[in-house]
Image 1: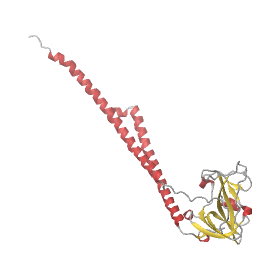
Image 2 (image 1 turned 135 degrees about the horizontal axis):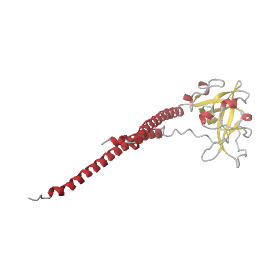
Image 3 (image 1 turned 90 degrees about the horizontal axis):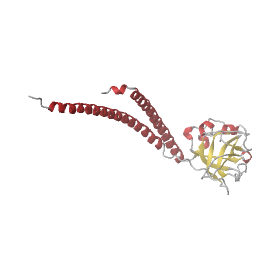
Length: 273
């Protein structure tokens, strides 16, 4: 009855099921791993955003080690004077549904040291070559409060850097590359401004805080979905086998019934005495 399972058509089906099941197991495990990573990252970012401000020197310093991933989005304070002559614009930064620029300005903290400050966002001009209107930074001593961020790289940001940009413009907040063209040492990382004192009369629009979202909830749902597909694949495979067995039994029983019906008239004929 089950010899049909060894026919070429069924052997192909068995092979497909045997390949699909481990693939779905792997995809489910990968999604569960992404869920754990994003949940941990979401919890860390949420905690860092809620933590009280600390002096920047407690977490990072110009010429020192790079900003740690664990300290990203911590609120820090640092004082100094803005160096508008070495300011930069970061291209292709959308905000509020509009294309624009981030405004980077070094904050000189003294003794040949500085930190890059993202002062905020300004909309792009009428054309790609039009210089945007950028409010100048305040003069004199300023205290900046903002979120500590890691410097951007192509690998970390997913953005591709390219040469040939207009003077004073970059595509990445690559603090290592930016620092190579400055007359002082800078921190390997930057500060995303949220507040400054004294407050200027006009300033770029603040960069919104990161959206931690569902913390990997979608990845959890996708992981469960892939493992449900395993049950569906196995259930469908068994259902096809049962249906094939039922069809073959029905054909056999139908054949036996036909033979019995053909014999019945012959058996019922009376033999002459």
